[in-house]
Amino acid sequence: MEAFNAGDVEALVALYEPQAVLCRSDGQRMAGVSAIRQAFDGFLASKPKIRLHTKYAIRVADLALLCAQWEMTALDPSGQPLAPTRHSSTEVVAASLTAPGAM
Image 1 (cartoon, helix red, strand yellow):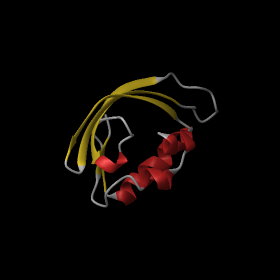
Image 2: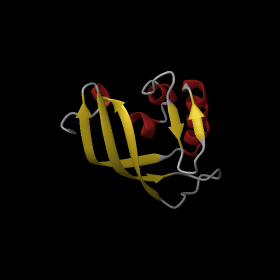
Image 3: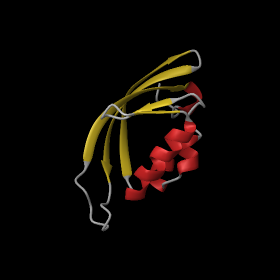
Image 4: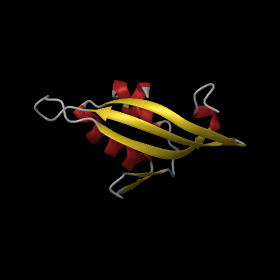
């Protein structure tokens, strides 16, 4: 969340395995870190900020299944605030990337 709110594309991309696939809510898929980096580059131009609430985290060996609710704010090209966006997400991540106490 800190990397996202800071607009740090490289820190965000470092969270993904080389063969990772990022699926957007509209169904678009970005395969591989190069495509994921390009997606974040464009998206972070709106200076988004996110607040995240972890609903649950289940760890199995070195993987974790995370489910979270989040709210995001961003700016339009003229710098005016856009309406907040609220969604939930489910991700499979390396257990080492989960926040302490999340599981």
